[in-house]
Amino acid sequence: MSDFRDNASRRPILSHASRPLTVTIAAWNECGERVPTAIAGEFPLTLYVDRREIVTLMTLGAAPEALAIGWLRNQRLVTRLDDIASVQVDWDSDAVAVTTRHGLRDADERLGSRTVTSGCGQGTVFGGLMDEIDAVRLPADRRLTQATLYALMEAVRHHESIYKQSGAVHGCALAAADGDACRILMFVEDVGRHNAVDAIAGQMWLDGLEGGDKIFYTTGRLTSEMVIKTAQMGIPFLVSRSGLTQMGWEIARRVGLTMIGRAQGRHYLLFTGEERFSR
Amino acid sequence: MSDFRDNASRRPILSHASRPLTVTIAAWNECGERVPTAIAGEFPLTLYVDRREIVTLMTLGAAPEALAIGWLRNQRLVTRLDDIASVQVDWDSDAVAVTTRHGLRDADERLGSRTVTSGCGQGTVFGGLMDEIDAVRLPADRRLTQATLYALMEAVRHHESIYKQSGAVHGCALAAADGDACRILMFVEDVGRHNAVDAIAGQMWLDGLEGGDKIFYTTGRLTSEMVIKTAQMGIPFLVSRSGLTQMGWEIARRVGLTMIGRAQGRHYLLFTGEERFSR
Image (cartoon, rainbow over all chains, first blue to last red; front, side, top):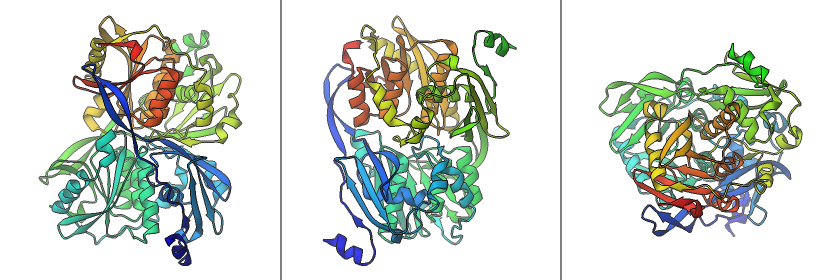
């Protein structure tokens, strides 16, 4: 049981409760033909921390343990993986029970106010996040080349399995430049795009990965919260196939993030942090 | 001042604080050229009801008064427009102050639990919504023809102004069939797709429009919450260019909604409620 071996190094004890990702239903197309259609799973998952109900996330269910850990990480309710003793998902009760070693950080204060961020499905304690964003320091000496960017876009294209089958999901990837090539280290899809970000943040902790030499890719829009979370993970490069919002742009400039959007085919727009990018 | 005339009929007194919708920044394209790029505005708007802070929404700011009213409507915190005395948006403080005539319905209970729905940016009191969904009755005798569907898709294509300029927004339309033609009655875009739904729900109240003979269109995915809100507005037809999630499908069947997705060009998939649809 690798869980118990892991626990010896104070890695949390984890369930392994990934769900089937798509179901196939019958739909009718424009010709009136009945066509089997794969659709993405969507399940409520209620997060309990030390028996306190915190939030219910609607999720595809692909990586529920990493999602719970990453949600707590990105909400700044837990500051080290070491603080988490156990993460147990039970789909019979649609619940994930997290046990901490020292409780949550400023739980009452942080869970008191909530901000619903742009189409992101996070209900974030946003004020708190904004206060902390100025403390983020992203490495200035990292570089991204256009060749690596194109390699990333190509690699992502081959990864989006659920999206190809069913649509209705967002994908996020954690990647690392390898010369002008690009390796995808993690790829997560979810019905909520911020679930995918959070699941990657959780898996980065579980795998002991730092963000400083990584590239974060999302199919979703570059809204304020997407930028904040990328910066919080310490990742200097954020790439999206989608567009940008004004606050996303302002925060990216404030934290010195290198942000690229509208990345499709051989096209892209470099929005901020041009000093790290070379064609 | 139409506001005061409106108020004579107990219509709430409204500010008119729509914001500029896009700003233009300089980006660099794949050729290294500096290109002016329009991006969508994204602003925090904190909702206060009778001086109590409820939530902060990240919004494009196009229809903040209708958004505040529709958010309260779709959260089932207010059951009639008549209960709202005034809605005043002040962008200097990023706040919208709603004054009710009788307070909010079950406010403490409803605001106590929160569910973060799939990529929707609503932090909905979802349990409450699910309890009520079974009370929804959608008219069985309405019909939608393929010709009207195509007319709707064509009409929407001409409407998406912000999206065309900047991307990074979702659009929603309220439409009515007119023989085989289709009239768009409202079209709202926002950085959060559920803001767009809520703004339309609010404007429907302000304009005294019922949902029973309407068609709701969204560029966003057909997740559980999108289906629930359409049903709550009493609208029997939901059309999207995007895909569907499992829970969206299950709830649409439960409430008997006619739901069409992947509507692009001359293609679509009819997912549920086929008895109301004819080719």
